[in-house]
Image 1: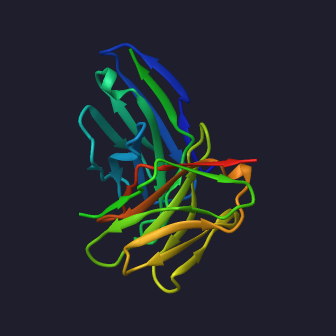
Image 2 (image 1 turned 45 degrees about the horizontal axis):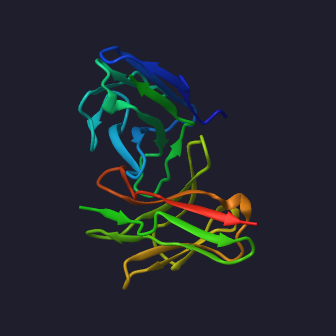
Amino acid sequence: NAGVTQTPKFQVLKTGQSMTLQCAQDMNHNSMYWYRQDPGMGLRLIYYSASEGTTDKGEVPNGYNVSRLNKREFSLRLESAAPSQTSVYFCASSEKTRFSEQFFGPGTRLTVL
Amino acid sequence: AQSVAQPEDQVNVAEGNPLTVKCTYSVSGNPYLFWYVQYPNRGLQFLLKYITGDNLVKGSYGFEAEFNKSQTSFHLKKPSALVSDSALYFCAVRDLGDKLIFGTGTRLQVFP
């Protein structure tokens, strides 16, 4: 099993450009998440999806959109990138229970110039 | 609202010595607590969790954590540190639904 995979690993954008970060999991998990990690701030939840066809905002959703394409895939889109969106982005998935741990992908390092 | 705090940005320890990484929590209701580790340029890896039962929870790589309800703490411990334990450690608490709230992280540096 590959677990949680993310593409791309690195990306440099200019302000105003758009891009989509891809995430897929092969563990048949219902729940999927997008986080951003910034120095000194830990991980902050951007969006999450409790099941196929549903998405909800997290702590920092502004400037982002998501699509839960199917049970395996959960993408994150930046419509008009801003320097404040320079960060490392992590996708995660878990079983749909309160006791389940989340499994993380390797991350995407995004720089917006 | 649920929250966790990691009061130390960095912890330094000599190899072979015991280590402790601190975490305190604030929750309404029963706390569901987690520890994760992040090695450089990698995603987070699950170490252990407390749901209910024994206050001492054992996890991966020889780590354990002690749940203390009266002190609202969930400190991560290891009896004998290895240089390879050097990494960033995150405490987390389950929020509403399936969400996790993470602490700001503690960098553990183990010196030879």
